[in-house]
Length: 64
Image (cartoon, rainbow, N blue to C red; front, side, top):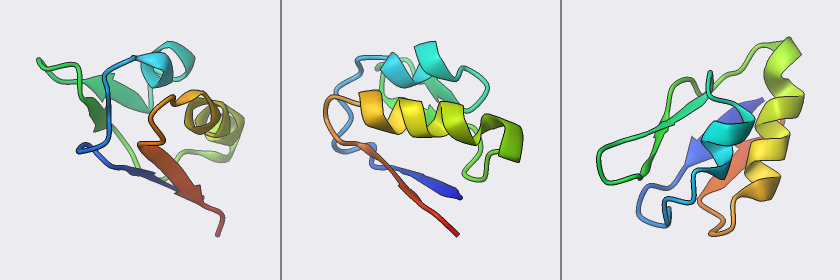
């Protein structure tokens, strides 16, 4: 799995950080910061939930 974050689309809702603070953060403007683009197998469900909860569609993932 590979996570992608489009910072130009992010609206700063923070849902990703609430779901998976070990995978996502926000900068001073509340825009998503991807801490890793390849989560461990144990964190893949959290990554999927974060992508699903992103209201702007800024997050996506590729299953590998």
